[in-house]
Structures are given as C-alpha cells and as structure tokens.
Image 1: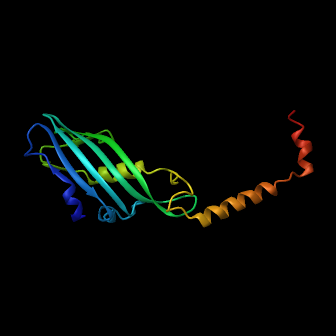
Image 2: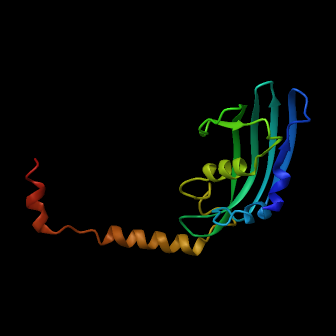
Image 3: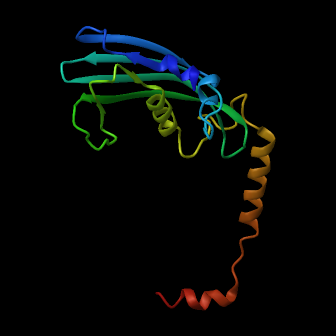
Length: 174
C-alpha cells in the first residue's frame, strides 16, 4: 500500500481555489488491490481539487485503456474508458455517517487519499458485458473462435424441428 501514498493530496497548505493534480494509473496501481478485476491498464487521471472554506470538491477525469477479455471470443483487447466523476469532502467536527455522496474530514485530517476513489470509478465504468467494438475486424479478435461460434449457431438453427406433441398445446392459447 506504500505505492498508493503518491495518490494522497495534502490540502492543508493549499490556498482556497482550484488546484490540478495528475496521476498515471497502470498495472502497478491495480497490483495493490488484491482481488482487482482489472489487472493491466494505461490510464491518465486528472484531479481538480476546488478548496473552499467548508469543503473540498474533487473533479476526476480518467481517460485511457484497460485490458479486458472479450466475453464472446475470449481474446484480450484494450477497452477504452473516459470517466468523469465528482466527489465532495466536507469538513466537520461531528461524526456523520459517510455515504457515497460526501466524505467527512475532521480537523486532524491534513490530506485525502484518492486511490480508492480512482479504483472504484474505473471498476464501475467497466462494461458489464465486454465485447470489442468491431467484432471480428480487429487484430485482437480470435477469428477461429468466432467462426466456431457461428458454425455452432448455424447448426442449432438447422436442428430446430418441432415435436408434434407440442403442436396441440400451442393451439390451446388461440
């Protein structure tokens, strides 16, 4: 976790107003998270910190590619990501239940670590079903696997004959 220390932003010495921070998010970043779904990445993260009297407003812009496995042909391909998120950190003496919307900082806090936020934003932005944009026409596609899948689906269509015993039941609804 020591390598994640570079993702800490010391806000106590900063003047009020906007400040820019840039981070490279690569394989070493994801190695720090034991059960990470993402293993390889080439991302650039820009964080704009807007320091105000009672809060910090963090605007994230993460752009680049993450290595993903195609759910159709099982080949590895670069999944492009372009993420824009905002997080608010509020200064407060009282303990408030933290939620996803607002982070609470007390007087003793002098820095905020954004590594967890960056990790979360990237994982949430990953598509639920990973498939490359131009299926079969990219150098990453496993053309042999796609051909086998097409042959299997064609065989299923040919073998789709109906059992005459079910025909009587289909007429019931009409």
